[in-house]
Every structure is written in structure tokens, then in C-alpha cells.
Image 1 (cartoon, rainbow, N blue to C red):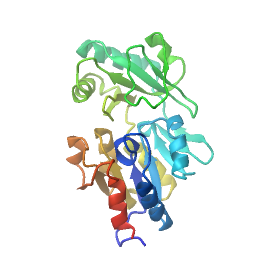
Image 2 (cartoon, helix red, strand yellow):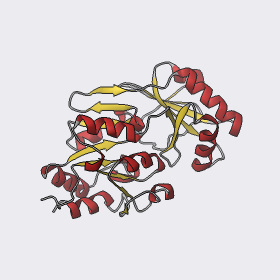
Image 3 (cartoon, rainbow, N blue to C red):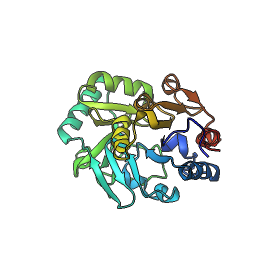
Image 4 (cartoon, one colour):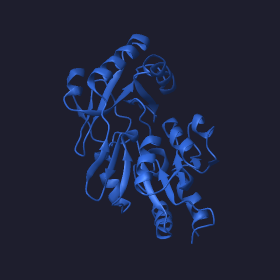
Length: 268
């Protein structure tokens, strides 16, 4: 049964939050989510991963509903395997933003997530994927990144930390794009104004729910807009300090089933 203040909507990030380091879901987390949904709560994945990279995970979760993907740029319906809504980043804006960033910090290595349910992740020769288990296609030169519409650009710098690169990118390109850090090793450029909060609000509205109904879980600065939108935000034990600063609660780590720890208390 749900506790008196149990949420009607549970929004979970994936990497570093619901998923363990090996990209798997623990039996304890699956059981806790199953108990919550049996009590009437809705579970919504809200992830930086593009839609094609969440299909198998949603199957593992038994989800046939909505998922917010691409840092809020995609609203994916698992049941019909289609995008209900998406927002792309046009090439001119992406190239202008990259040019401004490189003028500020020197050469960066770039990758892109293509839009669509079958979109590819394309990476420049020097770009190294932060999640080696995720498929990517290497291209010969930067121009090849733009061969199809994209939802976001991913950046790495040979020397700067994620925090340093994200701060520099916001400083010179923040008027053109939304800059997020979903790390480690992942600084991203999205269409301006698009965040996990905008995607979550869109999905929640379709479910007839709002901020007051929502409990959000996350671990990185890209989850900050989602925490500010939701009634309550829970950060993982090893979350980025910026997220912990706005969280209502800190749970255990993803390896220690931090999401399940909270849900087991709320749904008994």
C-alpha cells in the first residue's frame, strides 16, 4: 500500500541513478518499482539517452508507456515504438555554438545523437564514448555529423574537466543552446530551452499529472531542472554537489539501490 504522501508519478534518471554501473537493473529496484506501480503510481524514465538507446531497458522494466529521452528533446511511446514529440538542433546553430566554444577553450571532440527512433550516435575520430556499452558509429570528419537531423551534440575536451568545459560552453554559447552536464565525460548541447523539466512536464501533462504529484531521482546537474519542477527531488549518495544542493533528500548510491530504498519506504 502507498504511504499517505506517496507520489503519483515517479521520475527516474537512468545512468548513475536507476541503473547500476554495468547498465543493469537490480532485482530489488525492479521489485520496488513494481510495488509502486501496483499501488497506482506511474513510473517515467527521464534520461539523456536518445530513444533508440532505451528500448531494451524499457522492456526490462516492462514499460509500454512514455519515456522522456534526449535530455527532454524526445517524448517516446514504448508501446507503439514511436516519438510522440521531438525537438531537433539545427546544423547552423550547432556549428555556431561549437565555433564559439572552440574559440574559447581550443579544440573539442564532438558526437551527435540523431533524431528518430532509429537514430544513430555518430562520433568524431578522437571522441571516446563515456559508456562503451552504447553503440556508436565513427565518422571521418565533423561535417559527417550533420548528415541527418540531430537532437543534441556531445562534447569532450582533452584537458578540461566536465565542470570547466560546461562552464565555458555556457559562457559563450548559452544564448544559443542549452548546455548540460550529464557526465562523467558528457557535456551536451541541446535546443535552447529544452531540459529534462520541459520533457517531464510534457509527459506528466499527458498523464494528467503535475509537479505536485511527482517524485524525481537523479545524480547529475542535468537533473537540476527536473528537481526544481517536481515536488520532491532525491539525489543519489554519489551525486554531483550541484544536484545535492537542490535535493530534498539524499539516498544511497545506484549500486546500493538508492531508488528502491526510498520507494520501499513510501510503498509498503
